[in-house]
Length: 415
Image 1 (cartoon, helix red, strand yellow):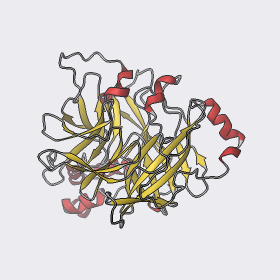
Image 2: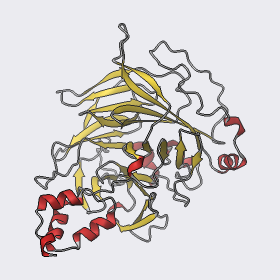
Image 3: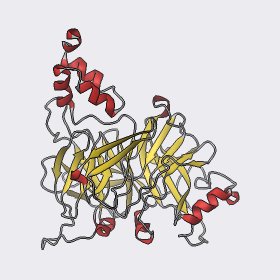
Image 4: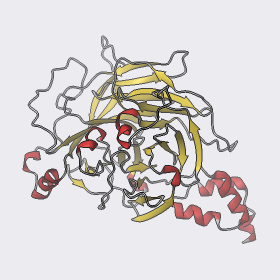
């Protein structure tokens, strides 16, 4: 036992970073005094290697406990987190959440270690100091997405990293802004495209996709930050409800999320013709030809819920070889993710190797309910539309059988 206690701190750090589950972290810290000291220093970088589902806040709010579910080993973790009571939460990465309260307090919060980093107040702060907001005001006024360029905690200095860029989608217009640890304000990135759907940090730069599927690279190092359009709007994007951008197997993918159900009217619009450089003309056709012949269980699901996921399509950015094209990249349809699984929703979109985690299904999209615009028209808020979509057979399954609903902060992936 004494020999184990004498292992170098660097070796212990490397061992701990390879642990998969939170229970293993706790056991690691309880081995002996030297191991505990390394555990304390390494917190807060620790995060679950596989995504956890963080459930919505209980309606009664009698308890400060938030529930996390590990889908791959069926374990449930209960954490007392009074820091998140009544707050909108958005999943980022490296085990951090972005939390926003009706008092306009914005924080990066690490639930496993309780470390908290205060961020500047939102750009839309009311100058007269009026902060009396209802939870429903979170829908339009607060942040939609948050992506980090790196872990905000520096493993060498054990301090918050000023080089970490925090990029957010905010406000009614779904605009972009960023800040760093220690900054006193958000820096807006002017754009004429509007309605940004998702952002990703890829090869040292932030990339964004808007609601029409047009892709951009964000230049944040210039004196005046700006957008550069790099890929055109794909055809037939009118029916898309949400879009995500994610790095997967060193490629940059854009995922289109389609929803239907009795909330929607029949769509009689026709696809617009496009002159843009697209690899596959039928890029947004339904994944299965038998959509009109759904079984009774699926029909009942659509009738019971105001909306339901009806399909996904995936595109990949590739360098364009067209001489006269004004875009650097073109879209190519992706039919299979191989060993990868995607996790999308109110969080940084994530791709991971399914074979690395027992129970994780390859070539699938794990999704949570992020259809914020429709939450006010539901009985108990959002959280109905969650599941796993298989690209191989076009089938849907539940990844969580329970119910977890909220008007302003639905279940999300904690990664």
